[in-house]
Amino acid sequence: MSAAMSSRGAVYRRTALLGTGLIGGSLGIRLRERRLVREIVGYDRDAGSLALALERGAIDRGASSAVEAVRGAQLVVLAVPVLSVVDLVREILPALEPGAVITDVSSTKQQIMEELTPLLSGRQVYFIGGHPMAGSEESGIRGADPALLESAIYLLSPARGTPEEILERLVGLVEATGAQPLIIEPEEHDRLVALASHLPHLVAGALVHSTLSGGEEEMVRTLAAGGFRDTTRVALGSPEIWRDICLSNRQALARALEAFQGVLERLRRQLERGDAAALEQFFRQAREYRRRVPHRGRGILPELFELVVLVPDTPGVIGRLATLLGETGINIASIEILHVRELEGGSLRLGFREEEHREAALELLRRKGYRAHCRR
Image 1 (cartoon, rainbow, N blue to C red):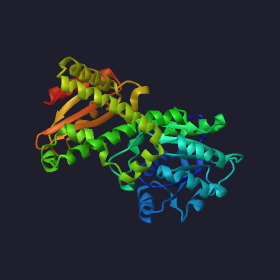
Image 2: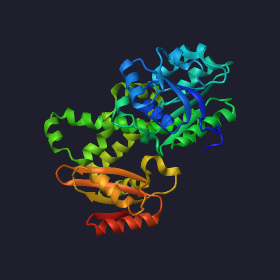
Image 3: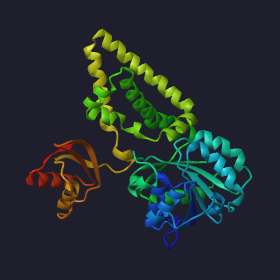
């Protein structure tokens, strides 16, 4: 446990959670279940979402306004759309306690921090931009899951002049949630997430639209296989949220799109020439890089030893698999569903902290009749 925590375990006495959707709700549940804060006061413009957040244990009590929620709070978490952050800070600023820390969970940072700098100048209030690299196709508090934070990269962008002890305290909180904090400058943050997160969402949407433009959408939907579903999965995200993300990071995203268009143009020329060698090299390089991409942001965490197992499409199969391994003392660090083929089954990727556990699991599963193989 971080040295920033008190002897009772809480990092902050009172936390205000403004926004009780997917990420806000997931964070609130994790903070409460690990007793990292003594009290969470929540506020959401949607009274139904606020009531469900209380029911699900994301908050201790609800407030009737954002201003009421932040009174007496040492930490204020803004889990609202990116284009709402600055206006919300302006609204709550007069009610904040001296020394209060404000953080957000927005997907972009530079525009927010540029606008907040003059607003917070001369005040004893600190802003540390936050961005947990986690998400789901689910939306709202009903989709909240504290497991989203487990092993996720959690980017932090402190405003210039933020005292070291203020930053260390928030870093300790993030670590205690199970996420991996990473300090990054706002400009670098936006450039990198444009490439790693925002561009893939735009491309997924564009791929879906490309099937609509030919007038064959019904047949494409009928024939859509795992490749199409996997590639376009992120297009299921909230249109309103992704609209705001794109607008707030439009410069970095425009540059990323320009580079992507260059790749597509080069690929088009290779196809027209029938350049087999270039096409093979294109796919080979893509495959090699993709193999090195860590699962759920584990690139700076200890290596996981993985195996893939084919399972039947029957109720409870994942639970039975976990129980089988657990009863023999084999600890699974991660489980990921790779794909499911209706009526036939699908594949699971299992990750283990120890190579011996991976080898023991492989031997046990094969002995029990499962088809499994290691990922090297």
